[in-house]
Length: 232
Ligand SMILES: C[S@@+](CC[C@H](N)C(=O)[O-])C[C@H]1O[C@@H](n2cnc3c(N)ncnc32)[C@H](O)[C@@H]1O
Image (cartoon, protein in one colour):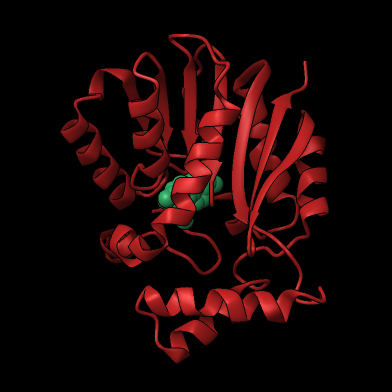
């Protein structure tokens, strides 16, 4: 079972995951589009690793956009991976996907990948050093020059615009069906169960993990995207 300090992606959470965040899907859609643009120069037959694939949101999008690409799907939560497996079967893309129930370091040895996509994963790694190690493990599975597209929560409650950002995003949580107490819990969890590091800190740790040309690709309130290339 994939367990972070607070978040366990168990069967109950997996079953609710896609439906719960459906009202936010346009934000994810923008991120998917930017990911597609970042990876647009990959060749036919590219090998792409979807790390923390969850129920397969970014995998489904990229597989449809690039019909020749092959995917290594890395996901430690069995219930999340089961939903992803069902979506892969429904989309008829099973021949292009290798599924791994586990994390990147336990992935069997294989040829290097051309790209890795890790959306909303590394912010769950709150133990000191674990986040940089996560990106270093990804770098080790990429070819030199291979792409990384990561998305995560970032920021600081001390930033001047944090309260305004909370006011802007809180109605989105309400749209997702969260009552006042659940929304308060969400904000409390940031910085405790979910890593809250500044954009600059996240960029620096991606660089220290073996990447170069680290680019802060986008901001959607407290959600951010990065693109980088494996140092070669
Ligand atoms: C919030 S979900 C994101 C799923 C998907 N990427 C998306 O954007 O919809 C985070 C996922 O990361 C997985 N995860 C947690 N720790 C991980 C790790 N160390 N390596 C890979 N995946 C991990 C969880 O099991 C969960 O499915």
